[in-house]
Image (tube, rainbow, N blue to C red; front, side):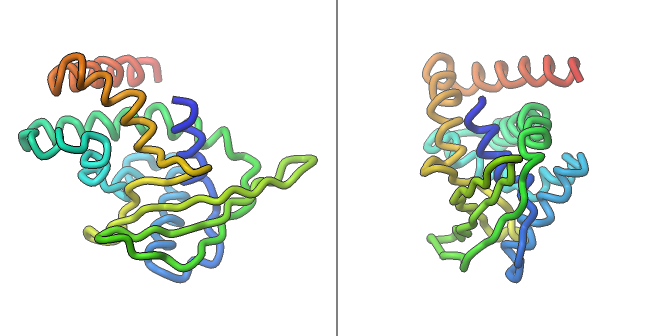
Length: 186
């Protein structure tokens, strides 16, 4: 989960600069909540339903409401337990994030941003795109770093293999087992 952690690090710990629109304000709020370890509130700024749709594609529509709820709860629990702590550590050198004008992509909005990291000897800039949707405010769905969408990587490397091996039950059981391990070790 190293690459998703890097991508998530960019998403969550970049201080947003020049936030003028509601999408940028959602990103700033998420950044602040994760930085100050308010993970439960930060998760409320992510669109769990849209993340589920992107991660599971056609399987999402076939799932029962109970399976969807269980998946979302497990995914967000794992996300907070595994990625958020890495994010806080990985981006101690993050200087700023400057967002450009949002682009409408269907019912989603893509918000291109430039992330600046300041290490002792060098400055590094990365192009990042945040994908948001409007559901009771703007919610973050995904983030694209170095040409790769975070959820695509998780889907291809983790979700699809588990679904092929055992379907919904196998996926949900593996997620719950992993979540139990990471919450016990905290």
